[in-house]
Figure 1: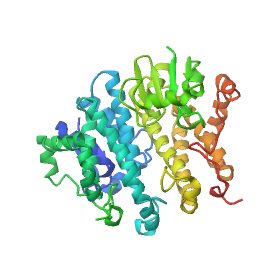
Figure 2: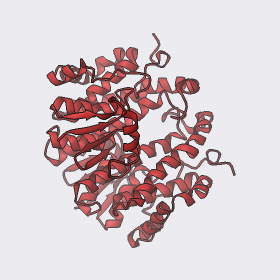
Figure 3: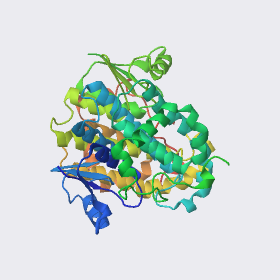
Figure 4: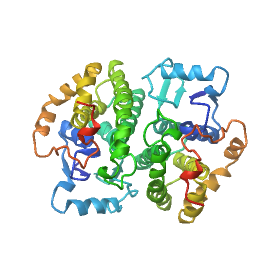
Length: 231
Length: 231
Protein backbone atom coordinates (compact mmCIF):
# COMPACT_ATOMS: atom_id res chain seq x y z
CA UNK A 1 0.00 0.00 0.00
CA UNK A 2 1.35 3.40 -1.02
CA UNK A 3 -0.63 6.12 0.74
CA UNK A 4 -1.26 9.38 -1.09
CA UNK A 5 -1.50 12.53 1.03
CA UNK A 6 -3.04 15.68 -0.43
CA UNK A 7 -2.37 18.89 1.46
CA UNK A 8 -1.31 22.49 0.81
CA UNK A 9 2.46 22.71 0.29
CA UNK A 10 2.98 26.01 2.16
CA UNK A 11 3.24 24.89 5.80
CA UNK A 12 3.05 21.74 7.95
CA UNK A 13 -0.52 22.63 8.92
CA UNK A 14 -3.30 20.09 9.24
CA UNK A 15 -1.37 17.58 7.17
CA UNK A 16 1.52 17.31 9.60
CA UNK A 17 0.23 14.76 12.14
CA UNK A 18 -0.47 12.44 9.21
CA UNK A 19 3.08 12.85 7.89
CA UNK A 20 4.48 12.18 11.37
CA UNK A 21 2.47 8.99 11.68
CA UNK A 22 3.41 7.72 8.20
CA UNK A 23 7.08 8.62 8.77
CA UNK A 24 7.27 7.06 12.22
CA UNK A 25 5.70 3.87 10.91
CA UNK A 26 8.04 3.78 7.93
CA UNK A 27 4.98 3.59 5.68
CA UNK A 28 5.31 4.26 1.98
CA UNK A 29 3.55 7.45 0.99
CA UNK A 30 3.58 10.23 -1.57
CA UNK A 31 3.14 13.82 -0.42
CA UNK A 32 1.38 14.52 -3.69
CA UNK A 33 1.15 18.29 -3.63
CA UNK A 34 4.89 18.78 -3.02
CA UNK A 35 5.69 17.55 -6.52
CA UNK A 36 5.24 19.21 -9.89
CA UNK A 37 1.63 20.10 -10.66
CA UNK A 38 0.88 19.54 -6.99
CA UNK A 39 -1.70 22.22 -6.40
CA UNK A 40 -3.85 21.26 -9.42
CA UNK A 41 -3.82 17.68 -8.09
CA UNK A 42 -5.00 18.98 -4.73
CA UNK A 43 -7.78 20.98 -6.37
CA UNK A 44 -8.86 17.88 -8.31
CA UNK A 45 -8.98 15.93 -5.04
CA UNK A 46 -11.18 18.66 -3.53
CA UNK A 47 -13.46 18.36 -6.57
CA UNK A 48 -14.00 14.72 -5.60
CA UNK A 49 -11.94 13.32 -8.48
CA UNK A 50 -10.35 10.68 -6.25
CA UNK A 51 -13.78 9.18 -5.55
CA UNK A 52 -15.69 8.98 -2.30
CA UNK A 53 -17.56 11.90 -0.77
CA UNK A 54 -16.29 15.32 -1.91
CA UNK A 55 -14.08 16.65 0.87
CA UNK A 56 -14.68 20.09 2.39
CA UNK A 57 -10.98 20.85 2.74
CA UNK A 58 -7.53 19.24 2.82
CA UNK A 59 -6.00 17.00 4.07
CA UNK A 60 -7.25 14.11 1.95
CA UNK A 61 -5.71 10.64 2.18
CA UNK A 62 -6.08 8.04 -0.54
CA UNK A 63 -5.40 4.51 0.63
CA UNK A 64 -6.18 2.13 -2.19
CA UNK A 65 -9.88 2.59 -2.93
CA UNK A 66 -10.54 4.41 0.31
CA UNK A 67 -10.54 8.23 0.23
CA UNK A 68 -10.60 9.91 3.62
CA UNK A 69 -10.79 13.50 4.78
CA UNK A 70 -10.54 15.38 8.08
CA UNK A 71 -7.28 14.96 10.00
CA UNK A 72 -8.91 13.32 13.02
CA UNK A 73 -10.72 10.75 10.88
CA UNK A 74 -7.60 10.00 8.86
CA UNK A 75 -5.44 9.71 11.98
CA UNK A 76 -7.86 7.40 13.78
CA UNK A 77 -8.07 5.07 10.79
CA UNK A 78 -4.34 5.10 9.97
CA UNK A 79 -3.50 4.46 13.61
CA UNK A 80 -5.62 1.31 13.52
CA UNK A 81 -3.92 0.18 10.30
CA UNK A 82 -0.39 0.89 11.51
CA UNK A 83 -0.69 -0.12 15.17
CA UNK A 84 -0.67 3.32 16.75
CA UNK A 85 -3.65 2.85 19.05
CA UNK A 86 -4.74 0.09 21.40
CA UNK A 87 -7.09 -2.53 19.98
CA UNK A 88 -9.52 -2.23 22.89
CA UNK A 89 -12.57 -0.01 22.60
CA UNK A 90 -11.90 2.31 25.57
CA UNK A 91 -8.40 3.14 24.24
CA UNK A 92 -9.68 3.88 20.76
CA UNK A 93 -12.53 6.03 22.00
CA UNK A 94 -10.32 7.95 24.43
CA UNK A 95 -7.87 8.61 21.59
CA UNK A 96 -10.70 9.75 19.33
CA UNK A 97 -11.96 12.20 21.94
CA UNK A 98 -8.41 13.52 22.40
CA UNK A 99 -8.05 13.92 18.62
CA UNK A 100 -11.29 15.88 18.50
CA UNK A 101 -10.03 18.08 21.33
CA UNK A 102 -6.79 18.78 19.47
CA UNK A 103 -8.80 19.80 16.41
CA UNK A 104 -10.89 22.15 18.55
CA UNK A 105 -7.69 23.64 19.93
CA UNK A 106 -6.24 23.95 16.41
CA UNK A 107 -9.18 26.08 15.42
CA UNK A 108 -8.52 28.40 18.36
CA UNK A 109 -4.81 28.53 17.47
CA UNK A 110 -5.86 29.60 13.99
CA UNK A 111 -8.54 32.07 14.99
CA UNK A 112 -6.21 33.99 17.28
CA UNK A 113 -4.75 35.44 14.06
CA UNK A 114 -8.06 35.22 12.17
CA UNK A 115 -10.80 36.22 14.62
CA UNK A 116 -13.04 37.84 12.00
CA UNK A 117 -12.72 35.86 8.76
CA UNK A 118 -10.48 33.37 7.02
CA UNK A 119 -11.25 35.38 3.87
CA UNK A 120 -9.31 38.36 5.23
CA UNK A 121 -5.57 38.67 5.75
CA UNK A 122 -4.21 38.93 9.26
CA UNK A 123 -3.27 42.56 8.67
CA UNK A 124 -6.94 43.30 7.99
CA UNK A 125 -7.97 42.00 11.43
CA UNK A 126 -5.08 43.05 13.64
CA UNK A 127 -7.04 45.01 16.28
CA UNK A 128 -9.37 42.07 16.83
CA UNK A 129 -6.44 39.64 16.95
CA UNK A 130 -4.71 41.85 19.50
CA UNK A 131 -7.83 41.71 21.64
CA UNK A 132 -8.27 37.94 21.30
CA UNK A 133 -4.61 37.01 21.91
CA UNK A 134 -4.42 37.57 25.69
CA UNK A 135 -7.52 35.43 26.23
CA UNK A 136 -5.90 32.74 24.10
CA UNK A 137 -2.55 32.91 25.91
CA UNK A 138 -3.90 33.25 29.45
CA UNK A 139 -7.02 31.08 29.36
CA UNK A 140 -7.44 28.85 26.33
CA UNK A 141 -3.87 27.63 25.87
CA UNK A 142 -3.54 26.70 29.59
CA UNK A 143 -6.95 25.02 29.52
CA UNK A 144 -6.17 22.80 26.52
CA UNK A 145 -2.54 22.05 27.38
CA UNK A 146 -3.55 21.34 30.97
CA UNK A 147 -6.10 18.85 29.66
CA UNK A 148 -3.53 17.10 27.46
CA UNK A 149 -1.05 17.05 30.35
CA UNK A 150 -3.70 15.27 32.42
CA UNK A 151 -4.27 12.68 29.72
CA UNK A 152 -0.56 11.87 29.84
CA UNK A 153 -0.55 11.93 33.65
CA UNK A 154 -3.44 9.45 33.64
CA UNK A 155 -1.20 7.03 31.76
CA UNK A 156 -2.65 7.18 28.24
CA UNK A 157 -0.73 4.43 26.42
CA UNK A 158 1.52 5.53 23.53
CA UNK A 159 -0.56 6.28 20.43
CA UNK A 160 -0.99 8.60 17.48
CA UNK A 161 -2.09 11.22 20.00
CA UNK A 162 1.48 11.38 21.33
CA UNK A 163 2.84 12.11 17.85
CA UNK A 164 0.15 14.71 17.33
CA UNK A 165 0.88 16.40 20.67
CA UNK A 166 4.54 16.63 19.62
CA UNK A 167 3.35 18.67 16.64
CA UNK A 168 1.14 20.87 18.84
CA UNK A 169 4.14 21.78 21.01
CA UNK A 170 6.27 22.38 17.88
CA UNK A 171 3.66 24.73 16.50
CA UNK A 172 3.10 26.62 19.74
CA UNK A 173 6.82 27.08 20.36
CA UNK A 174 7.09 28.60 16.90
CA UNK A 175 4.03 30.84 17.22
CA UNK A 176 4.21 31.87 20.89
CA UNK A 177 7.81 31.41 22.06
CA UNK A 178 7.59 33.66 25.12
CA UNK A 179 4.24 32.28 26.22
CA UNK A 180 5.55 28.75 25.94
CA UNK A 181 8.85 29.47 27.68
CA UNK A 182 6.87 30.74 30.66
CA UNK A 183 4.22 28.00 30.60
CA UNK A 184 6.24 24.87 29.87
CA UNK A 185 7.30 24.25 33.50
CA UNK A 186 3.61 23.58 34.17
CA UNK A 187 3.38 20.84 31.53
CA UNK A 188 6.41 18.61 32.16
CA UNK A 189 4.85 15.51 30.61
CA UNK A 190 4.00 17.27 27.35
CA UNK A 191 7.55 18.63 27.21
CA UNK A 192 8.97 15.17 27.90
CA UNK A 193 6.68 13.68 25.27
CA UNK A 194 7.91 16.24 22.77
CA UNK A 195 11.52 15.29 23.49
CA UNK A 196 10.76 11.57 23.36
CA UNK A 197 8.99 11.84 20.00
CA UNK A 198 11.77 14.06 18.60
CA UNK A 199 14.28 11.37 19.58
CA UNK A 200 12.49 8.56 17.76
CA UNK A 201 14.85 7.63 14.91
CA UNK A 202 12.31 7.92 12.09
CA UNK A 203 11.04 11.25 13.40
CA UNK A 204 14.56 12.64 13.87
CA UNK A 205 15.42 11.67 10.29
CA UNK A 206 12.20 13.17 8.97
CA UNK A 207 12.53 16.44 10.88
CA UNK A 208 16.02 16.93 9.41
CA UNK A 209 14.90 16.10 5.87
CA UNK A 210 13.46 18.32 3.13
CA UNK A 211 10.21 16.37 3.49
CA UNK A 212 9.52 18.42 6.60
CA UNK A 213 8.04 21.76 5.61
CA UNK A 214 9.14 24.82 7.56
CA UNK A 215 6.60 26.67 9.70
CA UNK A 216 5.38 29.78 7.91
CA UNK A 217 2.83 32.55 7.93
CA UNK A 218 0.61 30.40 5.70
CA UNK A 219 0.05 27.89 8.45
CA UNK A 220 -2.23 27.14 11.31
CA UNK A 221 0.48 28.19 13.77
CA UNK A 222 1.82 31.63 12.88
CA UNK A 223 4.36 33.78 14.60
CA UNK A 224 3.21 37.37 14.86
CA UNK A 225 5.38 38.78 17.60
CA UNK A 226 2.75 41.21 18.81
CA UNK A 227 0.35 38.34 19.58
CA UNK A 228 2.81 36.60 21.89
CA UNK A 229 3.20 37.53 25.58
CA UNK A 230 4.90 40.89 26.11
CA UNK A 231 8.71 40.59 26.16
CA UNK B 1 -28.32 -0.55 29.31
CA UNK B 2 -29.48 2.81 30.65
CA UNK B 3 -27.33 5.57 29.14
CA UNK B 4 -26.51 8.60 31.28
CA UNK B 5 -26.07 11.90 29.47
CA UNK B 6 -24.33 14.81 31.22
CA UNK B 7 -24.80 18.22 29.64
CA UNK B 8 -25.63 21.79 30.65
CA UNK B 9 -29.37 22.20 31.19
CA UNK B 10 -29.67 25.70 29.63
CA UNK B 11 -30.01 24.94 25.90
CA UNK B 12 -30.01 22.01 23.46
CA UNK B 13 -26.40 22.76 22.57
CA UNK B 14 -23.78 20.10 22.02
CA UNK B 15 -25.85 17.52 23.84
CA UNK B 16 -28.75 17.66 21.40
CA UNK B 17 -27.61 15.31 18.63
CA UNK B 18 -27.06 12.68 21.32
CA UNK B 19 -30.57 13.18 22.68
CA UNK B 20 -32.02 12.93 19.17
CA UNK B 21 -30.21 9.66 18.55
CA UNK B 22 -31.25 8.14 21.88
CA UNK B 23 -34.83 9.31 21.41
CA UNK B 24 -35.11 8.10 17.83
CA UNK B 25 -33.74 4.71 18.83
CA UNK B 26 -36.10 4.48 21.79
CA UNK B 27 -33.06 3.88 24.00
CA UNK B 28 -33.35 4.19 27.76
CA UNK B 29 -31.43 7.19 29.04
CA UNK B 30 -31.27 9.70 31.85
CA UNK B 31 -30.61 13.34 31.06
CA UNK B 32 -28.81 13.61 34.38
CA UNK B 33 -28.37 17.35 34.67
CA UNK B 34 -32.07 18.13 34.14
CA UNK B 35 -32.93 16.63 37.49
CA UNK B 36 -32.38 17.91 41.01
CA UNK B 37 -28.73 18.50 41.84
CA UNK B 38 -28.00 18.25 38.14
CA UNK B 39 -25.26 20.82 37.81
CA UNK B 40 -23.19 19.43 40.72
CA UNK B 41 -23.43 16.02 39.04
CA UNK B 42 -22.17 17.54 35.81
CA UNK B 43 -19.29 19.20 37.62
CA UNK B 44 -18.38 15.88 39.26
CA UNK B 45 -18.38 14.24 35.81
CA UNK B 46 -16.02 16.96 34.57
CA UNK B 47 -13.78 16.23 37.56
CA UNK B 48 -13.46 12.68 36.24
CA UNK B 49 -15.60 11.15 38.99
CA UNK B 50 -17.36 8.83 36.52
CA UNK B 51 -14.03 7.17 35.66
CA UNK B 52 -12.13 7.20 32.41
CA UNK B 53 -10.07 10.14 31.16
CA UNK B 54 -11.11 13.49 32.62
CA UNK B 55 -13.25 15.23 29.98
CA UNK B 56 -12.44 18.75 28.80
CA UNK B 57 -16.08 19.76 28.52
CA UNK B 58 -19.61 18.37 28.30
CA UNK B 59 -21.29 16.36 26.86
CA UNK B 60 -20.23 13.22 28.68
CA UNK B 61 -21.98 9.89 28.14
CA UNK B 62 -21.78 7.04 30.60
CA UNK B 63 -22.65 3.66 29.09
CA UNK B 64 -22.03 0.97 31.67
CA UNK B 65 -18.33 1.14 32.45
CA UNK B 66 -17.55 3.22 29.38
CA UNK B 67 -17.31 7.00 29.83
CA UNK B 68 -17.14 9.01 26.61
CA UNK B 69 -16.73 12.68 25.79
CA UNK B 70 -16.85 14.87 22.69
CA UNK B 71 -20.11 14.84 20.75
CA UNK B 72 -18.58 13.39 17.58
CA UNK B 73 -16.94 10.52 19.47
CA UNK B 74 -20.11 9.77 21.41
CA UNK B 75 -22.27 9.92 18.28
CA UNK B 76 -19.99 7.64 16.27
CA UNK B 77 -19.94 5.05 19.02
CA UNK B 78 -23.66 5.22 19.84
CA UNK B 79 -24.52 4.97 16.15
CA UNK B 80 -22.60 1.71 15.95
CA UNK B 81 -24.39 0.38 19.05
CA UNK B 82 -27.86 1.42 17.93
CA UNK B 83 -27.61 0.74 14.20
CA UNK B 84 -27.43 4.33 12.95
CA UNK B 85 -24.48 3.89 10.60
CA UNK B 86 -23.53 1.31 7.99
CA UNK B 87 -21.36 -1.56 9.16
CA UNK B 88 -18.90 -1.14 6.27
CA UNK B 89 -15.72 0.85 6.78
CA UNK B 90 -16.25 3.49 4.05
CA UNK B 91 -19.69 4.41 5.45
CA UNK B 92 -18.39 4.72 8.98
CA UNK B 93 -15.40 6.80 7.94
CA UNK B 94 -17.48 9.07 5.71
CA UNK B 95 -19.89 9.60 8.60
CA UNK B 96 -17.00 10.36 10.96
CA UNK B 97 -15.59 12.97 8.59
CA UNK B 98 -19.04 14.52 8.27
CA UNK B 99 -19.39 14.58 12.06
CA UNK B 100 -16.04 16.33 12.36
CA UNK B 101 -17.15 18.85 9.77
CA UNK B 102 -20.36 19.58 11.69
CA UNK B 103 -18.29 20.16 14.84
CA UNK B 104 -16.04 22.58 12.93
CA UNK B 105 -19.15 24.39 11.71
CA UNK B 106 -20.58 24.46 15.23
CA UNK B 107 -17.51 26.29 16.41
CA UNK B 108 -18.03 28.91 13.71
CA UNK B 109 -21.72 29.20 14.62
CA UNK B 110 -20.62 29.86 18.17
CA UNK B 111 -17.79 32.24 17.41
CA UNK B 112 -19.99 34.51 15.33
CA UNK B 113 -21.37 35.73 18.68
CA UNK B 114 -18.08 35.13 20.52
CA UNK B 115 -15.28 36.19 18.16
CA UNK B 116 -12.95 37.40 20.91
CA UNK B 117 -13.40 35.16 23.95
CA UNK B 118 -15.78 32.64 25.47
CA UNK B 119 -14.91 34.30 28.77
CA UNK B 120 -16.66 37.51 27.70
CA UNK B 121 -20.36 38.09 27.23
CA UNK B 122 -21.71 38.77 23.76
CA UNK B 123 -22.42 42.38 24.72
CA UNK B 124 -18.71 42.81 25.46
CA UNK B 125 -17.75 41.81 21.90
CA UNK B 126 -20.57 43.25 19.81
CA UNK B 127 -18.48 45.31 17.37
CA UNK B 128 -16.33 42.29 16.50
CA UNK B 129 -19.42 40.08 16.19
CA UNK B 130 -21.00 42.62 13.87
CA UNK B 131 -17.89 42.49 11.71
CA UNK B 132 -17.68 38.70 11.69
CA UNK B 133 -21.38 38.05 11.03
CA UNK B 134 -21.54 38.98 7.30
CA UNK B 135 -18.57 36.70 6.54
CA UNK B 136 -20.34 33.95 8.42
CA UNK B 137 -23.68 34.49 6.65
CA UNK B 138 -22.30 35.06 3.14
CA UNK B 139 -19.33 32.70 3.02
CA UNK B 140 -19.06 30.18 5.82
CA UNK B 141 -22.70 29.16 6.18
CA UNK B 142 -23.08 28.61 2.39
CA UNK B 143 -19.78 26.71 2.28
CA UNK B 144 -20.70 24.29 5.06
CA UNK B 145 -24.37 23.84 4.16
CA UNK B 146 -23.38 23.41 0.50
CA UNK B 147 -21.00 20.66 1.57
CA UNK B 148 -23.68 18.87 3.60
CA UNK B 149 -26.14 19.24 0.72
CA UNK B 150 -23.61 17.51 -1.52
CA UNK B 151 -23.20 14.64 0.93
CA UNK B 152 -26.95 14.08 0.75
CA UNK B 153 -26.94 14.49 -3.04
CA UNK B 154 -24.21 11.85 -3.27
CA UNK B 155 -26.62 9.41 -1.62
CA UNK B 156 -25.18 9.14 1.88
CA UNK B 157 -27.27 6.35 3.45
CA UNK B 158 -29.45 7.31 6.43
CA UNK B 159 -27.35 7.61 9.56
CA UNK B 160 -26.77 9.61 12.71
CA UNK B 161 -25.51 12.40 10.47
CA UNK B 162 -29.05 12.90 9.17
CA UNK B 163 -30.37 13.38 12.71
CA UNK B 164 -27.53 15.74 13.47
CA UNK B 165 -28.15 17.79 10.30
CA UNK B 166 -31.79 18.16 11.39
CA UNK B 167 -30.48 19.81 14.54
CA UNK B 168 -28.12 22.07 12.55
CA UNK B 169 -31.06 23.37 10.50
CA UNK B 170 -33.15 23.79 13.66
CA UNK B 171 -30.40 25.84 15.25
CA UNK B 172 -29.72 28.00 12.21
CA UNK B 173 -33.42 28.75 11.66
CA UNK B 174 -33.60 29.94 15.24
CA UNK B 175 -30.40 32.00 15.12
CA UNK B 176 -30.51 33.39 11.57
CA UNK B 177 -34.13 33.27 10.38
CA UNK B 178 -33.77 35.80 7.55
CA UNK B 179 -30.50 34.31 6.30
CA UNK B 180 -32.02 30.84 6.25
CA UNK B 181 -35.27 31.94 4.60
CA UNK B 182 -33.21 33.36 1.74
CA UNK B 183 -30.73 30.48 1.53
CA UNK B 184 -32.95 27.42 1.98
CA UNK B 185 -34.02 27.23 -1.69
CA UNK B 186 -30.38 26.37 -2.44
CA UNK B 187 -30.33 23.39 -0.06
CA UNK B 188 -33.50 21.43 -0.88
CA UNK B 189 -32.12 18.11 0.35
CA UNK B 190 -31.19 19.49 3.75
CA UNK B 191 -34.63 21.04 4.03
CA UNK B 192 -36.27 17.76 3.01
CA UNK B 193 -34.08 15.88 5.49
CA UNK B 194 -35.17 18.27 8.23
CA UNK B 195 -38.82 17.62 7.43
CA UNK B 196 -38.29 13.87 7.20
CA UNK B 197 -36.53 13.70 10.56
CA UNK B 198 -39.15 15.95 12.18
CA UNK B 199 -41.82 13.52 10.96
CA UNK B 200 -40.22 10.45 12.50
CA UNK B 201 -42.65 9.39 15.25
CA UNK B 202 -40.10 9.26 18.08
CA UNK B 203 -38.62 12.60 17.10
CA UNK B 204 -42.04 14.26 16.76
CA UNK B 205 -42.96 13.00 20.24
CA UNK B 206 -39.66 14.16 21.68
CA UNK B 207 -39.80 17.62 20.10
CA UNK B 208 -43.23 18.17 21.63
CA UNK B 209 -42.19 16.95 25.06
CA UNK B 210 -40.62 18.80 28.00
CA UNK B 211 -37.51 16.69 27.44
CA UNK B 212 -36.67 18.98 24.53
CA UNK B 213 -34.98 22.12 25.84
CA UNK B 214 -35.89 25.41 24.19
CA UNK B 215 -33.23 27.29 22.24
CA UNK B 216 -31.83 30.14 24.30
CA UNK B 217 -29.14 32.75 24.53
CA UNK B 218 -27.05 30.27 26.54
CA UNK B 219 -26.62 27.99 23.56
CA UNK B 220 -24.39 27.38 20.62
CA UNK B 221 -27.03 28.83 18.30
CA UNK B 222 -28.15 32.24 19.50
CA UNK B 223 -30.55 34.70 18.01
CA UNK B 224 -29.19 38.22 18.09
CA UNK B 225 -31.24 40.02 15.52
CA UNK B 226 -28.47 42.40 14.52
CA UNK B 227 -26.25 39.45 13.48
CA UNK B 228 -28.82 38.11 11.03
CA UNK B 229 -29.15 39.39 7.44
CA UNK B 230 -30.62 42.88 7.21
CA UNK B 231 -34.43 42.86 7.14
